[in-house]
Length: 80
Image (tube, rainbow, N blue to C red; front, side, top):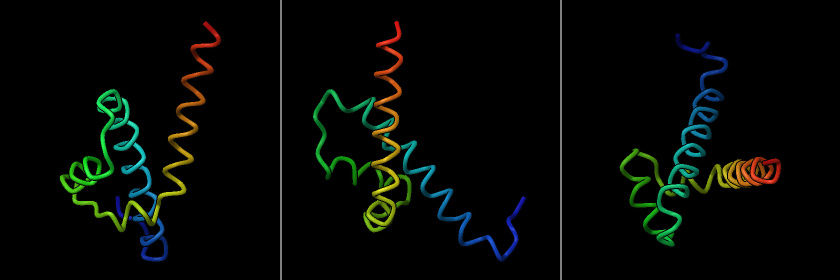
């Protein structure tokens, strides 16, 4: 299903934010223990056809999502 032309640009941005957030959270969970660099992240990001510009464009949203995920994980562990 395609969005209406009125909403297409908005939906592209929303889908980019979702995909980038998911990718970065998974990257941190899988690679975080190895202390990866920003260049490591960009290299893997390039495999998904995203650019550094796209990452920087949505950086505040992504940081908020990563922080929210960390808070939720900590709340789960504290509840146990």
